Length: 70
Image 1 (cartoon, helix red, strand yellow):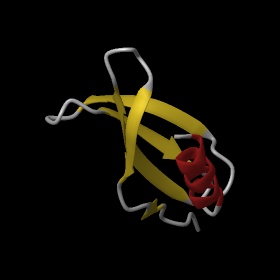
Image 2 (tube, rainbow, N blue to C red):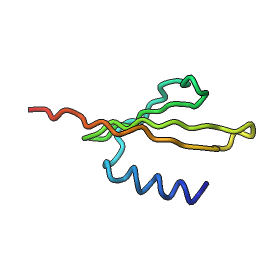
Image 3 (cartoon, rainbow, N blue to C red):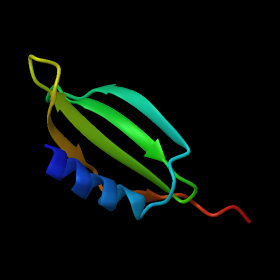
Image 4 (cartoon, rainbow, N blue to C red):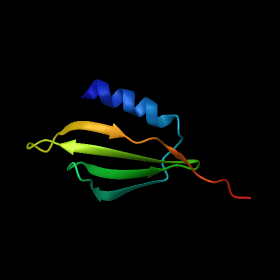
């Protein structure tokens, strides 16, 4: 999984520095959903934990640009 996390870190860093990270609940497939907000985007992702509590899979939803403030 470490190689995967290196990829995810590079992928997420393109959106800028995270300002907030919020747990949004458990989705219907049993994955823990989170929302990361940066200055310009909101990115949701899901994590699946195995029985040992270790991360088995991570999935990202498409990033949503934040509306610019006038």
